[in-house]
Image 1 (cartoon, rainbow, N blue to C red):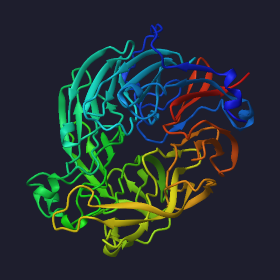
Image 2 (cartoon, one colour; image 1 turned 90 degrees about the vertical axis):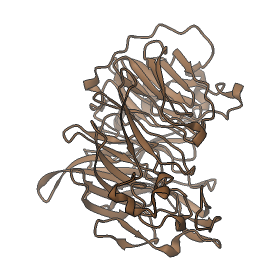
Image 3 (cartoon, helix red, strand yellow; image 1 turned 135 degrees about the vertical axis):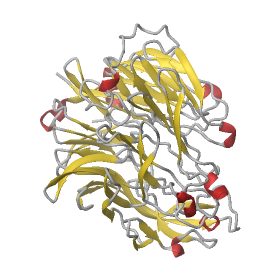
Amino acid sequence: MNLVAGLCTIIVAMAVAETPLHAPMVSLDPDLIGKAPVTNWTTFNGDYTGERYSTLTQINAANLSRLTPQWVYRISNVGAQRGAPVPIIKCTPLQVNGVLYMTIPDHVWALDAHTGKELWHYDWIDHGGHLIGQRGVAIWKSSLFFETPDNWLIALDANSGKELWKKNYADARKQYFSTAAPLVVKNHLIVGVGGDAMDMPGFLDSFDPATGGLQWTWWSTPRKGDPALKTWPNEMASEHGGGMTWMPGTYDPALNLLYWPTGNTNPVFAGQGRPGANLWTESIVALDVDTGTLKWYFQVSPHDTHDFDNTTAPILVDREVDGKPEKLLAQAARNGFFVTLDRVTGKHLVVKPFVPLDYSSGLSPNGEPIPIPDKDPSVGGSINIVNATNWPAPSYSPKTGLVYVNSVEGKAIYYLTDDSDKPSGYGGTGAGIGRQVRVLQAIDPLTGNAVWKHAYPNRNDASSTVGPSILTTASNLLISGDDQKNMIIFSADEGRILWHHELNANESGGIVTYLLDGKQYIVFGAGDSLYAWSISQ
């Protein structure tokens, strides 16, 4: 089945200047944010666990032959007026009370979730932001929150798109830029920031969602007087050390702990100017959500020199270990290690490679990988792995007990371009070499072992792209895609392909599902279009 052949049967909603339709009234009880998604999808990962798992079963293996597109919303004409590239939808849409909210950099749309018709459109003109992507919005009561590329936090009326208030939380002139979806927890609106290799420290801000007042800030590199400063050569190196917070975290209400992944260390490839582990870059951190106080950390990539942003979602898993119920946290990290931690204490249970790698000499007593210095980038070039995964979200199914991640197996060559004692910026480069293989894996979080794998065919020798996010459901479905423009549905327990469909572009954002007027929808972005699918009658 090819989507192009069936376009005449699809309602295509173009982003044109029209009088907005009357929107259904949206007002979300804050106590419902983070609950398991059924009729709504209220936050980036669907709920606070990061599982991206749905209990819905209406769409199942028995009726996939009747899964058909319901509507497509295309935005390809947006942005051209300012010379921007063709937009790619990298967000996870939210759906509340029949209204879908989707984003690209500088833009927010509200759509009728039944038809894909535009209800309203908000357009922000940024001043200096990087238009590399936008992950989505957050909602609280009838307010919608959006981060702009040039670091403005915008509060919008969820029913009209009218601006309520705005707050500038980082300086774009210092090369900060923002792509994240904010996270609402209780009366906290948590905002992360990006910045790549511009020698600035990462941070999290917590704002009052009603007023925009700042509640607390947590810096992802230590300040003066902090014992963790000993993991840097000096305070100056720490203050320019990176650790950006550009993907949303997860949250345990019972523990009142916020779990956030932190990004790469700066200078990125030139580690000779920052000896030490370089906390808290490349880590999973647990913070008290009311104060921003650090409770524990686990550094997945001590002294990283390969741009292994640790931005994959830390998934909260409840399992029995040695016959006792345990609160766990699992992550398939970009550096190629799968980790399972006690999320109360941060103690490691599993730290194991999930792709072939040879850059670590073992684990520290705390379970953290020990890097081999000879694998650092060099002037003549050094071989290491490509990014084993990236920002597209993994999933966990309580039904199978497995974590699912799209991974990449392959090698890259890394060059050191700044070998001075005080390097800055990237300080080097890295590029894939040879053939990269993309592999969907189902990993047991109690052992770190893959229960099954699916290697995607690579017809065009594509580079080391990771592919889309993953969604699992209670009907034993795993929904994802390859880098050949195919949407694919697998059986979650065994990895059998049950259904596939060719699109006009690769899936590029988060996949969501919800029940609307008794009908289950699957919605996702691919290229410049948002697609809605359901079972035909």
